[in-house]
Length: 292
Image (cartoon, rainbow, N blue to C red):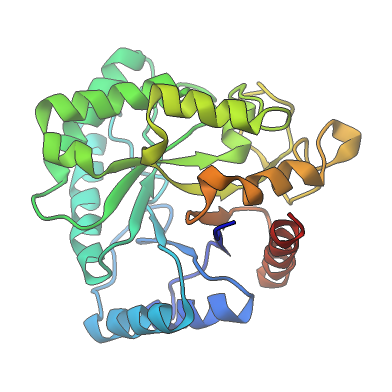
């Protein structure tokens, strides 16, 4: 069996190298971080030496790819042009800054069409991606699978595929570095049977999008039953995916960490935890992987 990389979201307040050291302290060999305040705002200037120090630490300790996360405030398909322009400008800045850490991933929530309809939302997202991604870019941009609450775009693999296809028609080079981040809570809430048929879910993703575009996972339990379209994360083993009393169990997460098709991918925890809780979940997932 290959290897999965496991980590969680970390604060970037003390810089890049500090995140790497924190990751090592909790047994992680990947991590996610927000490119700026998760609610928006200006980004700090990149410290090239600090970025290089993190890259050296990652190489020394065998880290997998990192997953930078766009702030939640970005909405490329907002009904308001000002909001769309802010998201495009900030995303372009994020991608340019990430060139200091080449070869990693940039994840974002596709957005909410707020009444314009999914078709319009998909086209607006594709147009924006075609504009903000640039020649020579070394960061792969990931569309996150969404739970489908409200007017979210990305509630199905088909919607994500339509975004990728629309980008490919306008900017083929950009489409080449578009991927997907599969969130286990979100796809369960969206109606996919992660609990009973992980292989079937991955088969469907392969058929609709292409499994080669799956570049990262968010590993979360869910406070809601399959198909609820709520998006409320739970700690591993305390929700519908991992709690036997709710129809799930540890084997759900065991299948994730042991799946041959998920080897080599970063698995990022977004459970409601502090660092000690993340350390326990990382160790538990590693134990599940080794037991297989």
